[in-house]
Amino acid sequence: MNNQWTVSKIKALKGKNKIICLTAADWLMARLLDEVGIHLILVGDSLAMTVLGYENTLPVTMEQMLHHTAAVARGVKNALVVADMPFLSYQTSEKDAIANAGQFIKKAGAGAVKIEGGSFRAPVIKALTRNGIPVLAHIGLTPQSIKTMGGYKVQGKTQKEAKELIKDARMLEKAGAFAIVLECMPPQTARKITKSVKIPTIGIGAGSVCAGEVLVVNDLIGLNVVPPPRFARPRADVASAIRAAAEEYLREVKGTAQH
Image (cartoon, rainbow, N blue to C red; front, side):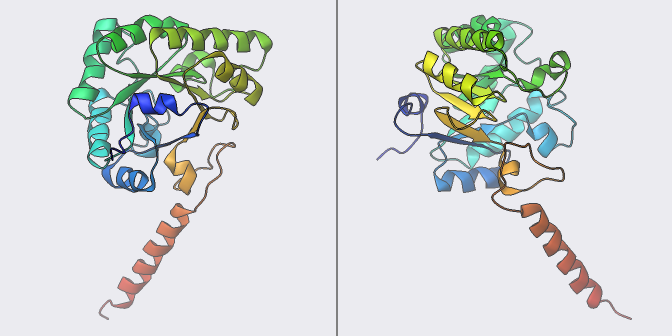
């Protein structure tokens, strides 16, 4: 039996079962998540902060994202691996978008790519999907646009903003996106968007009303040096466990020092 998660299988889950998604940035994490049965593993550009120590997602490069995507793909047998396209890898032209997205599929082994932006991204999504590259769209809070958004702010709070997001979702569906990430918006807005499109919506900080949910894995397992977002509930405290183990090792080795 083929247990591999494909774009078509993910789409078919809407209305039947929740789509479960987590991020990963390395082989080991990807393998562990895949063994559990996570449907979609996103190589998020959030690794800019969680792995590389940047303040936001903007500095991460194509080379870095390809490197981490390839590592994740090597650890996965069944999940759909989706690579986040970094800032300026698809905004400059459709030609650049196709060339860069193609690298994630051809070189790194991803099954799809994710790009941020509303209806103005429809031409790029259409170009990618026509060239055999599945696209996960992303609207609401789009971290690559924090300079124009003025920071990490909840989107879709007003009726006007909600209508715009619904319009965006419909345009992205029409362009060929197989699903849409809805980030940081009121649950009532996420519900309206989910009902307005046939493709799945995957929420993060959007309540539990979407067809699926995604979390940065560090926020799930408590592997942070700063508090996680308010919507994320850690199920473990891995950071404390690492510190405790390292401190115990430090004491043990110090205790064996020759005097």
